[in-house]
Amino acid sequence: MKFLDKEKEVHINMVQLFNYFEHISLLVEKGHVDEKIVKSAFKTLFLSIYSEFKFYIDERQVQHRRSWIKFEELCLKWAKE
Image (cartoon, rainbow, N blue to C red):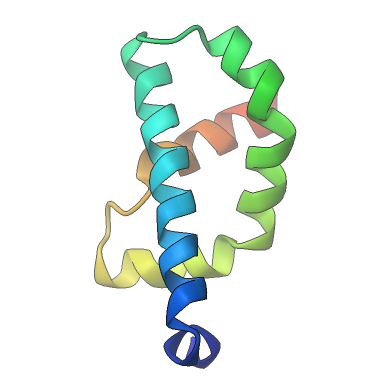
């Protein structure tokens, strides 16, 4: 990802965004927030971001295999519904 190597601020923002989505996904998994409410608010956003940036997630997971895994699992679950 040569573009992100040059654009450090964009890279930082993307990591923060995916960390935020990961946190929400963990809250859903642990039952700390209602999945129906989160799904109604975030499903479209999660799935579109996931599909657009799957390449980035995959590349990150090569180096850090558990990066954003709960976000990915939630997206795959919602995509099937």
